View 1 (spheres, rainbow, N blue to C red):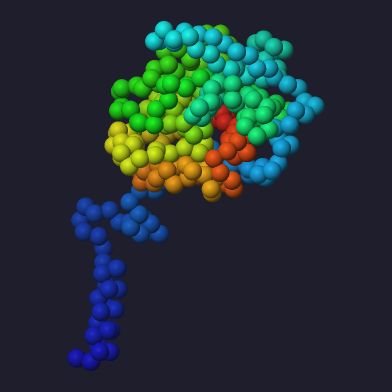
View 2: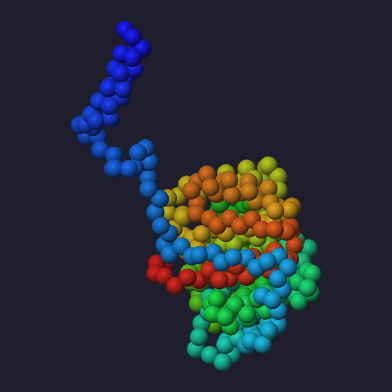
Length: 318
């Protein structure tokens, strides 16, 4: 048999197999789907368009401009363990002028070594300017008026992921103290659709360790410059939260996809990428933003500016 004959025979055999009808009881593949096992489904809310980050050296978005300003106040409470605690709270510009309005809440966490005052500090090098960022966005119609709660999680934030069903200290404080206090003292929209959780560096651990197991409490999670540090904590992140990641309904708990951001020279970059590899492995929808700069306030201010514009979408569903 010549090589030409062998080649022709193989081609005819392949063509015949491709045209052969499926066996009895076997569904015929839909045209164009090939070997795809499952078509991805859209999320519970329309996917937002992620706004561009401001330039690294842009200071205009957090400047004290001539727009209506909200106010920042301090609130004191005693936590479940009996400790006296404090948090800073931003109230949007129309909060006092519109006494019938209720607002969504962003719970915004500081980094290691800082406290609840850092996100509203106006130090140009090491301050968050969160209230000014929101004043400017709200005035421009780019963000919804919202309350921002900035608790002091120093001493309760942990780099070790908790086992499911065993809330860590920060989660307990959020569930038992912080959220009940805020809902009881301010005009909030007190349901998961109107609660977002964000944090930088050590505060990113709070987002992951409190937010992921408590998607009955929050519906949006934003991680700024954070990721598990050791191989043991990386492994615990996947193993402890595996039932969540494998739950086919878990994706639909996010009204906005899970958000990760880090700078290209960020000390947390590679750790965060390892966390995202786990998220990606189980098909969880997420935004990933790689910016210029490192582990520093010029980035964290930019991440807040970007994410505040996509928070609390107007859509149905829980």
